[in-house]
Amino acid sequence: MSESNIKKLLQSVVVHKSSDLHLVSKSEPLLRLDGTLKPINLPKLTGTAIEEMCYSLITEKQKKHFEEHHELDFAIELDGIGRFRANYYRTLGEMAAAFRVIPIDVPTLDDLNAPPVYKKLIKREKGLILVTGPTGSGKSTTLAAMLNEINLTEAKHIVTVEDPVEFVHKNKQCVFSHRGVGDDTKSFGIALKYAMRQDPDIILIGEMRDKETISAALTAAETGHLVFGTLHTSSAPGTINRIIDVFSGDEQPQIRAMLSSSLIAVIAQALLPKPKSGRVAASEILVTNHAISNLIREDKVHQIYSSMQMGQGDSGMQTQTQALLKFLSSGMIDRHTAMQYANKPEELEKALNRL
Image (cartoon, rainbow, N blue to C red; front, side):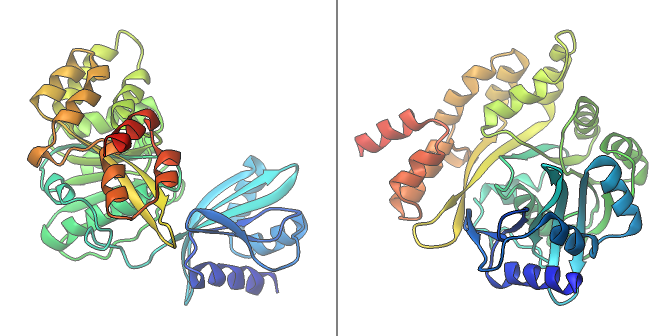
């Protein structure tokens, strides 16, 4: 019975076009719809009921891992329902779970109404492209659409390293080697070390979460590979600082030099609710040019933002404020939403007052 119950709940996530399902003891099941949590009209759950439902989806090996570590990340595809990324955890001694919908059909950049510069960026042969933002900001979807574009147009070997594997690409022009941390490899660092022996053209790193992974990503980008990665940062200049700050003081000059030569672009995005329904991605886009490379190398990252403000034209660069102003003028978002999500609310307010 428990397996059919969890499948019904996951089916309702897909039917309601929600992004997430939350199961927490003493609460009814909750859906995240357009960024807002909404209860499903069902009785409140107990920890025992959650455990019965959630255990019905996993293997004995996964149960053992959860019981030892109290955390479990995995992806699952259910016939006739969809694909989900799941996280099991404990809260006040009881089991809880969060499920995220992963579309089985990988979107295109056109489906996402992505800025035109994205199609230019993915034509590069080598270097580092970072897509950043908080959890739930659509980083995985943007990266999947970029890889999908390459898959449609070029013959490449693409190695992805994720925890867990989210979007599963069908081989079109490209061949994909999807590697899940825990299932197919022990760690991001080990996978990246051996990726170099797998003759990749392109490497996707699901999360650049530690020094070892960031080092390997920079080395791969420098040695002739196109590398895509994600970080949990909210602005483009902040992303560069985060990478540099992972390293000790005496290592930082070398890391700045590597970044200055290999960084292609940083896309820092947030998903904003539209006035009626749906969401739209507001992206701050930094595209590295000669001036920005020099600022990174010379430890003047604080000056990058003003370069982004001025470096518009055909570069495709934009600050988050400029992205928000475009959405406001087209009616895609309202003023309250723009101010709520703005990285620099004072700058946005000044710009609005000038209009």
